[in-house]
Image (tube, rainbow, N blue to C red):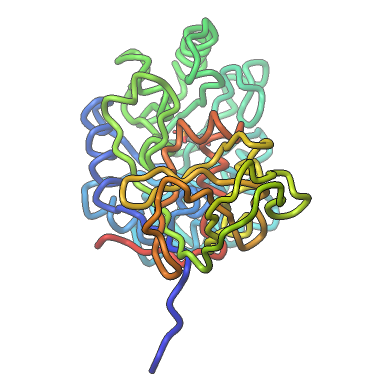
Length: 350
Ligand SMILES: *Cc1c(COP(=O)(O)O)cnc(C)c1O
C-alpha cells in the first residue's frame, strides 16, 4: 500500500538520549529519568524503552494516564507518579504496582491502608506540591513503605542561595522518615555538585538536549532535529509584503521559499521576524536561511538570497539548538520541546 510521506519531519536521536542519560548517571552516581509529558514531547514509550535497556531503573511521570501508557514497556514498580493520588485514582493505583508520589497528608491517609510501596514529596521551598515543613509530625509517616523521599529545587538553573537553603531544609525534613532512598536534583541540580546527588537524580530536560545551565554545555548532546520540505520558491518584488499582515517588506527583488512547517507543528509564532530582523533560521547546504514574516499554522517563509541552488522539493533543516532558540524566541526550552510532536511524524534513529 502506498502511504503518505510527511513533509515535516521530527527526528529524534534515541542514542543521544541514552548517551545523555549515561553521562548524567555517571556524574550524579545514579540517575532516573523524567518521562512525563510524553517524554517532553519526544515519545514516552520509545524513550523509556531505550533508557530501560540502557540500565535506567527509575521513571517519573506526572499522572496515571502516563503511567498506564508505560505499564507494558517497563516494570510498574519503577514508575513514580509525581502528581500523587486522589479519590478517583486510588482504585486504579491499588490495582497496579506504580508508586504514587504522596504529596499531602490526605494522600498519605488514602495510601496508608493499602500499604504498597510509595514515594514521598517533601516541599523544601518551591511552595508548589509536597508535604510542607509545618505539616511534618512524627506520626505522619507511620505505616508507610517509602522508597524515595524526594524534594524539588526551585532555582537549580540559577546561582542562587535558595539552593543551599532548600538542601538544608530537605536534610532536616527527611532525617527520620525511614525512606529507602533520597533524591533532590533535576538536570540543573546535578551540576550543583555531589552534595545534591544523594541516592538518585531525576534529570528530564538535559536527557532531551536541553542546556539549562552553562555547566551542562560540555556534556549534553543535541537530540532533536527538524526537517521541512520546500513547497514553493518564487521571486518576490521589492516593496512586497510577506505572509500575514505583511510584517516583512522585501528590501529588494528577492528569492523566497515557502516550507512545510508551522505553529501547529510546535514551531511557535515567536519565531516570526520582527520587521527585517529574523528570529528563526534554517539551513540548506550549510547556507543560513533567515525566516521572514509571520509563522503561519502550516507554513514558514524563508529568505533564500544566500542559497541560489534551492528548489521546490528540497529539504531544509530548521535550527533547533534549544538554548539559542530559547533566547531568540523567549520561549523556555521546556516549552519548545513539549510543543513539538502533536502533528509531527516522529522518526527515531533506532
Ligand atoms: C519535571 C521534574 C523533574 C525533571 O526536571 P528537569 O528540569 O527537566 O531536569 C525532576 N523532578 C520533578 C519532581 C519534576 O517535576
